Image 1 (tube, rainbow, N blue to C red):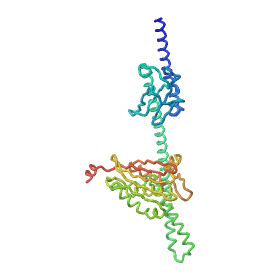
Image 2 (image 1 turned 135 degrees about the vertical axis):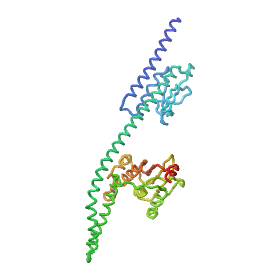
Image 3 (image 1 turned 135 degrees about the horizontal axis):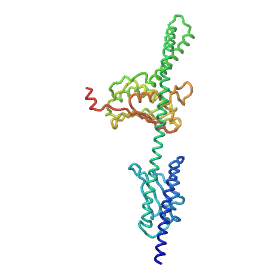
Image 4 (image 1 turned 180 degrees about the horizontal axis):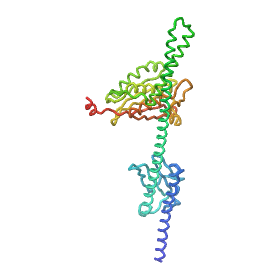
Length: 379
């Protein structure tokens, strides 16, 4: 009889081990499918957890990841629960839970076996590895897209610089002869009016060419030391009347302890003007534009927020591509934001954009500040 009991116990233990190994093998199989999203992987993993425990008929599983819960059908809270944290890069991202929906007698850990503790810990580690792998894949894809974008911008920049230089001379001739023609005595009013249009169009074209040259970095920054707040004050001065007339609130939140930066004040003024104009054009009615400066971690930040129409993800992905515009023909060149991008990168800074349709847009520029010891060296 004792031998029979021992044999039964060994068989039961072996059965439990097989179930646990089957569970871990199943997780490895699921995690190895490259076409599954992280959410699909998590959902499939929890489905194979209950059969691996001693009482699968009353077992239910849940994985909480970054505040989002993935559960088996019919899951509900229970006091008889076994859990393990999901630790990724030393940070707790969630938990793996296995519960019994009916009471069972206590064993090693409540109603759970000590081997089941090892199993749920192993499941949590496997889930953490899946998260790390998916994050690495996303980072790799993001870096690849950034490299493609940088290569595309470099190619377009070279083309833009060539086109700009080729157009400069004939455009200068057109503008010069138009201005000479306007000085002719006894010029008919209609001809003077038409020549005026030629002059305006030429000046606009020259402005576009200047933007192309800035984008292509053919006009190097004339850098000096200055406080960004002064550029912001000077730049916003010209928008006050326009904003007041259009019922748009213009808010300044300028840090009083902002350190100086080394930059081209003219180019940063152009950057600010482009961002504010972009914000104004996104608000057909009333709204608010907030321009803020801050200092943090050896960097000066300039942000421009608006309460306009916002942008979809598809538009957001293209805003720094030259000549891309959502405006009607004749109302935009598609160079404003690429010029902003070119100015920021030429100054060793970064730009971050957040936007949602109907909820406005936020541009944040980060530029390196001049530290006090650097200032002392230059004195």
